[in-house]
Image 1 (tube, one colour):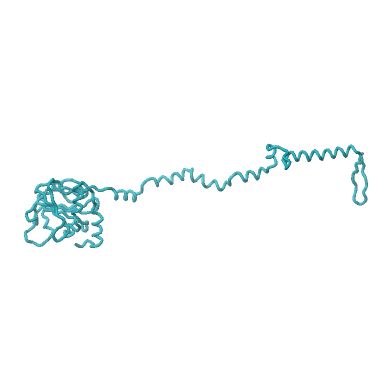
Image 2 (image 1 turned 90 degrees about the horizontal axis):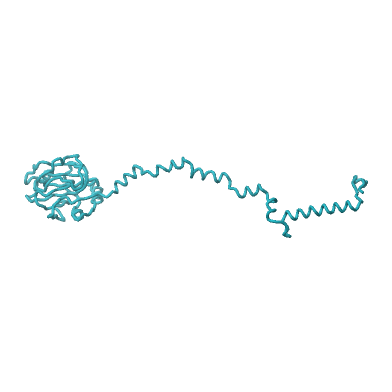
Length: 275
């Protein structure tokens, strides 16, 4: 039986003198301890794994397992958003400069300028760098490569013994190739109808016939010169030839495609178009 008791200045309290009451209190305390040990899975091994999660802080688990929203958001839209795809589209289309570069590196077709089975040509030439291609009069003279006609001479006004000048070539055709090089052929007996300044031709197209007009010493041949198109027209000293054509002709005769572009460009840089 519990009764209220007085403990001096310490205040009042309850004092339980009854034995059964004490026993009940003791049993209650033991029950609480047992429940705690079973739930906490202590060192004694009591408890199961399924009970463990109820003692783990849920907030701490979420923070540790889930990525920060700010670290994920920037990467996903960049990879999946329509604007990112749209911005990538132009790069797949070649730019104008890229297209120009592709055109510049495209292989150029070259053709031997005299279409005949029996031809010969010299490795050198008198006074300046050119070549005389010997063939029968009347053999076909064709365009070395595709390009545009720059100059055409349709009359032979050369006077024997006169100083060197633009009339030396007699009938002639000058062509600016698509590779930027000028190709010149003279002493023709005939210029093909329709071949005139500004006309576009393709590689192998008929330009005229082999002859001996101008200062040809009455020998059938094609005077052949390679040069940069400095003044394009009128600059006969450059037009008649500034680099040796022999090795290029040898390549083209065998169906090769050796290009004079680099050598012609080098001459232009070093001579400033002064022959």
